[in-house]
Amino acid sequence: MFFVCLVSAGCQNSNHKPWSVLPRSPLAGGKLVMDVVSDPKTFNPALATETTSTQILGYLFRGLTRESPVTGEIKPDLAKDWAISDGGRTVVFHLQDGLQWSDGVPLDARDVTFTFRRIYYNPAVATAVRSELMVGGKPFSVKRKGRLTVIVKTVKPFAPLLETMGVEILPRHILEPWVKRGQFNQAWSVRENPSHIVGTGPFVLEKYLPGQLIVLKANARYRPPVGLDPSPGCPMPCLSRLVLRIVPNDTSSLIRFMTGKTDLYGVSPQQMAVLKPVQQEDAFDLMVRGPSLSESFVTFNENPRAPLPPWKIRWFRNRLFREGVALSIDRQAMINIVLSGMGQPIPGPVPRSVKTFFDEKLHPFAYDLKKAKACFLRGGFHYVRDRLYDDQGHRVLVVLLTNTESLERIQMAQIVQANLKDVGIKVRIVPLQFNMLATMVMTSYQWEMLLFGLTGVVDPHGDSSVWKSSGFLHLWNPREKKPDQPWEAKVDALFDQGDTTLDPKARKKIYDEWQEIAHHELPMVDLVTPDEITAVRKTLGGIRPSPLGGVVPHITQVYQQGVLSPT
Image (tube, rainbow, N blue to C red; front, side, top):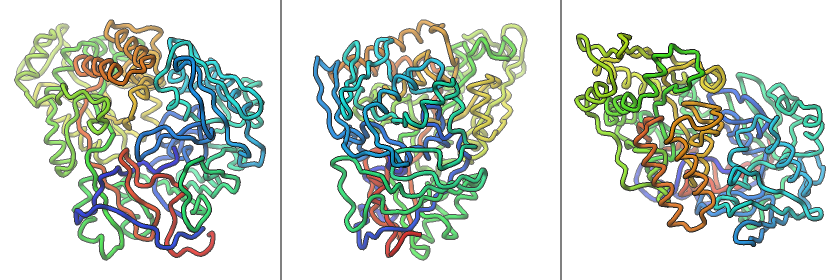
């Protein structure tokens, strides 16, 4: 949970030599400066759904378990160990002794039971986590035994249980009054005094200036997970501060990195031509691995409750319309133009790099305008002078939203606009600031088409919040009371089955079927994924790539070379 998810294993520098930064003189102190392109929406982990918030909260809070970015194994975090019994339906967790919240109050099993019972399973709390903490439609039973033992029981065996126990544990002594007053959904807003936000992560929130910066300082009461290799020569965390500057866009972030104002920078493939020639003189390394875990896509507003003309909702709910769009998009052009040749098209929601679950039978949609037009015709549309109309005479005009902070997404949207023009569809692109975009899509439903992206997960259970009809991030038709299409009901059943199946081969077969349904029904038309590249300043030590997307196995082990005292 506390590693920087930027680059994965198999990374190479620009000279194509295996990447390795070996510690030379790890010393306590120093700061790591990074940029973010939007303000957080909340400092409450239970309410956070977007990366603008979660990327910060991951440094402040911990769960019982954590996922190794090197192996994908589930490892101890707040828990020191666990025992599984009853055919996988019971797990007994033993907490580390001596854990403290950042304000000095001891952490014990009461915090864990409070977090699950009073927050995650509280129907009055607007949390996206709840749907991932259910099996067979039932919540886990979470009870304590003494001060340091937590017993978790499920109605059925739950394959990803250990993974889901990585959800953030929250402080009872701070948040219980908010719950009792029925005001938890207002707790720890971005207007909260930073000193009031209490966690167990390696850092605590020191300062937040909206639109300017976020400063995290080392948590003096942090206790590392059992089994985490200690960073030689300095206590954990080695860094005394993380400084996250809020910048308006990626171009500003690039300029700041090139002028030496930041230490880490996620590089887009287009920027390689700028950075590669100056990496030696500017003392940074470029690490390039294969395709990232991220998924870019176009999706459609199929929500019958949306404030849109009813004929537009009928278009978007028409599978043949969605297939026509999928066939109209030139993904190779996106790779060549937007990604400078450094990426690949994707066929579905599971990244190819997740070999355990990727369905090899699927292939990305080929760019085929003839087949695309045939799909529209079979779907009840017709052409008049190369313009597409529906069966009621409405010309097909759509508004495509994306976020202003991503130049890549804006460029992809322009390619989609040009491609759809070739099949008679007029597209107007409207870029919006990320938080405004999220509100329109998930709250007001005032949108038509969206070009966006999601960070991939290693276990498909992590996609349940998107793909289950009850999921909090079920973008195309959020907050359904029940599945309104048979294929959605089938996907719900497959996720429930996958959750309760312990045999790896059987789980693979279940999730293959889900991917095939997703590929056929196309509520999300998958586009491309870029190669993941990170620029790392050579003043940083303790950095090495990991197979699942990180450049450091644990943020606590990163240090600045030659820093002698905290700053």
